[in-house]
Amino acid sequence: MAIVPIAQLKEIFKGVSSFRFASTVQATLATATWEFELPITSDSFDVTQAAGTTTPTNVLGLAGAWCVAGEPGDISINFTMPSIKDSLVGIFYEKTAAELETADETQGTVTGTFKGYGYYLKRDMIEGSALIISENGEYALFIKNMQGYPALAFPDGNGSPMGITMNAMVVGGNAECDFALLKWTPAV
Image: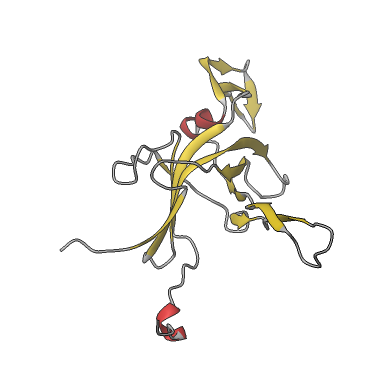
C-alpha cells in the first residue's frame, strides 16, 4: 500500500456557521427534521472527547502486560444559547400552561405589567440530535444522540445576555452512527 501524501489529508473543519437542533433523536440523517437554528455564543461552544482509559493485566514472569482492557473517552458537547424565546426555553424546561402576569409596574413614566410563562425543572435529561455546519459551509458534524441537562445562565448583569447553557454527552450505540463527519455535495 502506498503512503498517502500530507497534501491529500488537508480537509479542515473550522468554525461554525450554523447549529441546527432537534429535540428528539432523529431516526436517520436523511429524514432529519431540524426545529431550531440555535444562537450559540462563540466563546461557549466546545466539543471534546476525553482520553480513553486503559488497564493492563500483568502476570508473574512477564515484563509487559498480559493483556490490556479499556474504555473509550466520552464525547462532551457544551454551548450557551443567549436567548429567552419561550418556544426555545420550553424545549429545555417544562413550560407552565397558563401565562403569568405581574400587578401594575412602572417603568420610567409608563405603567404596565410583565407577562410571560413560568418553567419547571425537568427531571429527565434533554435528548436530541444536532447538525453543526462549518464556517465555510463545506463540512458538517451530525450528532445522532446527545443527552444532557440545561442550566439557566446569566453570567453578569453588565451586558452578557441571559440564556441557557447545555452540557451534554454524545450517546453511543445508535443504529445509523453515533456521529458523522459530512462533506457538502451540491445538487446537480
